[in-house]
Image (cartoon, rainbow, N blue to C red; front, side, top):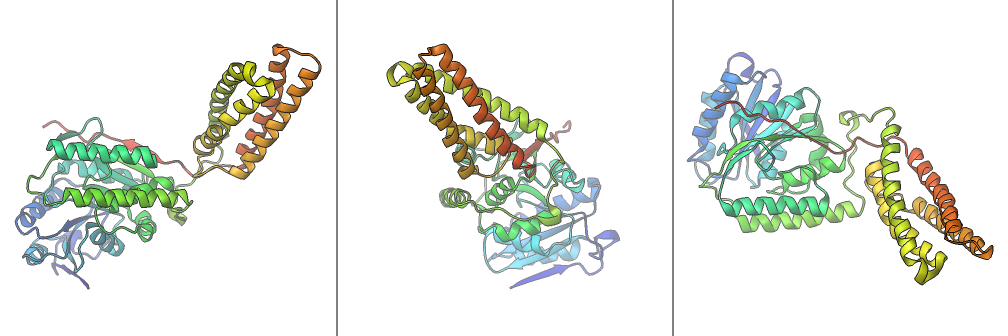
Length: 405
């Protein structure tokens, strides 16, 4: 069950009759000690210095103390404050419910302790309101951030984000900072695909966003750790590890692709120049490695055997690199690529057998390899050209919201 309460006669554009530009959700669970102070501080900041229309939603998810009562009193007293109550617990559940019901252009959330300096809020939402980016996150781990927190939390945070980079190739720097925003039209497409309703909700949202080529904007923040935080680090860490493993399986099966419809970022009409340069760089590196292997193994395996090892050794890496970097696809087209590999291996082997039959030496073999490897390269280039223009790549941009103190 859920309910929404708001002051019935608020002033100006905070009376709920017009959709706001930004809706700030504050998820809370048993926060009676800090809720009023934090919401008043947030309300004062938005009223004094925020240039867009806004709304604050206090999303209570299963509190057993007086949190809900305080939230209702704040909603009655302060214009532009509403309350969403959920019986079930979970930060992800609270955000899913609030964002799904929102009519704002941009939805965001922040932790109730206001650990993040509120001056970062405008840099967080501005790129989304302009249409430049799709999601925005505060980061405590990027250059320009200023953070005050204990050693244990710092180590766990850095280790977790390193794990995401190593296992799932995440490009953003901080998955769990409680300071994020997303365009509402993008959120409506993302939310049904997110399975987690707890602390992993943030990470899953960002992983799906990157998987689908959304642009993620990063804002370095000033952040002070809340010494009264009641987050269970062990349970949260285990849940994050389980969620990471689940997402790895999801992506390995080729799943996690979302049709964003009109909210999708349109690809460029023609980026063949970029693809050609990237393809060329990958090709040069592959050729150097293959040639080195051929020369190293020629004496032991013969020219045909050394060529087989050289061509095979770079096949997987070359195919993967062209898929991810040149075509920017989620996974290689292995069947077509394998056909190119088999054809290249047969062509080069036949050429080397003919050179050996004619009594040619190393120089002749190298000429034969140059010709046949070039033919294989043309085949790969044809595949890249045929794949056409891919979806826009995952993109992480950063701004620095710092102002003189």
